[in-house]
Structures are given as structure tokens and as C-alpha cells.
Image 1: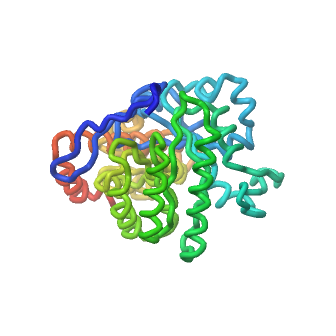
Image 2 (image 1 turned 90 degrees about the vertical axis):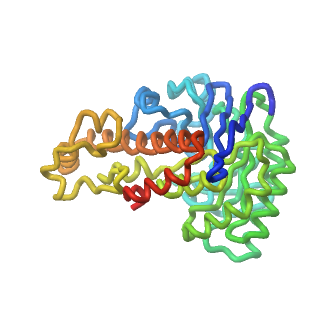
Length: 372
């Protein structure tokens, strides 16, 4: 790694083999395994940066596609970079926008040079290349940038998946050549769909390119969780042990634990804030739909085991009232809680790894119904 980045593998859990690590970045140290709140448009929906600090968020994610379209990477660069623009002084990771280009935007054509697409905002035409994406991500100035990749949808046949994987490898090499910012770590992305031989081939190819870290893309895109776990088990022997591993777009409590058990260090997911806006709380006792009538006279905290501001100060009955009254505070409190729930879960995961008892911790969570 360069002088700005260092990954320490502190230990592996004797009971499970899970990894406890530490990633040093220009804006602070990231304790791993970790969950990263998603701030797609340079803001985590309904949550202030100050609150993110208070709940222990060590890093957040922003998205290149969205920030390129609005307000534009040049404006963010003019403001002093993403950290200054959004007043966040801890680490940031920017997704390359590849997933959004292939899933959200209207695609006209995929070429060897890049992808032509239409903006989901106004229909305007744009063209992303590995080089242009690197220009955007370097202007945004996050601590960690992802390469531009092609994410094959699920299901996809073998031929298309292999072609998308090969193109991802070629684009990764172009990204690495175009990326010149030393104070920004560039992560490669392993693809290969749901085919074991392709996943192994991709893990080997990306490892040979010697990136600072590695994303695992193209999972949690509709496939059964058992297949995702199988793919993780397949590729991990071919992933560098001395580099951080990031499972992209995954963040349900069960997947966080199962991912860590299979060697993953970093996760992100929009689930926490998205379900909060629909009145759903993640708790150690399982999911709770707070808008339901059963909570009308429930004067207990959202989650009795949670230490967040919402759980310390308000009841399920009050939050349900806010939901029914369509008050903004409902989304704010539930978003804050769900994010703290996931961050605290990973804090407890790290403690369990340090104590060589992660399998016991998983069993305790299962008994409580956390994964329901």
C-alpha cells in the first residue's frame, strides 16, 4: 500500500476464522468488519453528519453516478472536495456508478470504450468510460474509489456473464492506469455472476492487478442467499489476505454476520434508511413494523437493547403516532435507530471476534430472533 493507506489484519477468530482488521486512511481509521451507511447524494437520508458521528459511523458511502449528474463533480471539487462540501471529516467511499448505470439509467449501448446512458433525471445523454469515471471520482476526493465495472444482472447466462467479467477486468486495468491520486485508494471489483469458475477467474485476475482493496460486486442482486454465501466461500481462497474485502450492497443482519464468517471486512446497504421511511425498525428481537396498530399503546423503546437517541428518549407508541401523522421526525428517528442498530451489531461482531466467540454470538442472535 502507499503511504496514505495501510490495512492491518489484527487477528482471526479461532472459533470461526472471521477477520478483525483496521484500515488507515487520510481521514481516519476504519475498524473492520464494518457497516457503511449510504449517503448516495452526499447525504444519508434524514440523518445529520453530527448524528452519524454520535452513532459511531466510521465511514460513509456516496455515489459517483448521482453526484456526476447533480450537482456535478466540478462543483464539488470547487467546494474543496466531498468532505468539505458535505462537512464530513471521516472517511468516505465512492461507488463508481457502474451499478446505477446498468440498473437505474436508460442504457443505449455498452461498448468496449464505455457505456452510453440516459440520465434518470432529465433523459440527457451521457457516456461513462473508465477514464472519465476516474476523473469524476478523483474530483470528488473520497478516501476510497471503486473501479468502473459491468454488473451482470441475475439471472444471466454464462456467455454474457463471462463477457461482462472480461470487460470489467479490462476496464479495471484502464481505471488503474488513469487513477493518479495517491491520497485516494482504488479498489478493484470482483465479478463473475453465479458461476464458480468465473468468480475464481475474476478474483485471480483482480488480485494480480494489486489494488489497495477489493470489492465483491454482482451479489445480492436477486439470487438466493445460499448462492451468495456459496460464491463468497468460492472466491475467498483467491483473495489477498492482506487487503480489505468489501461486499457491495449487502446489509441485512443475517448477511452481515454470514459475510463476516466468510471473510468479508466491509459492507454497505440502503436498507437501513429505506425501510425506516416505511415505518420499519430493525431490532435485536427481529423486524418491527412500528406503524402497526399493535404498537399504539406500546410505551417501550423501539429496541430495548439499543443505546441510540431515539431508543433512549422515545417510545414505539410515539413513533407510531408520528408515522400516522406523517411527521418527518418519524423517518429521522427510525433512520437513526436502524443505522445505530447495524453499526452496534458490527461493534459487537468485532468484540466477538476479539474474544474468539463469533459462532456463539451468532447463535445468541438467532435465539433472540434478530434475523427474523
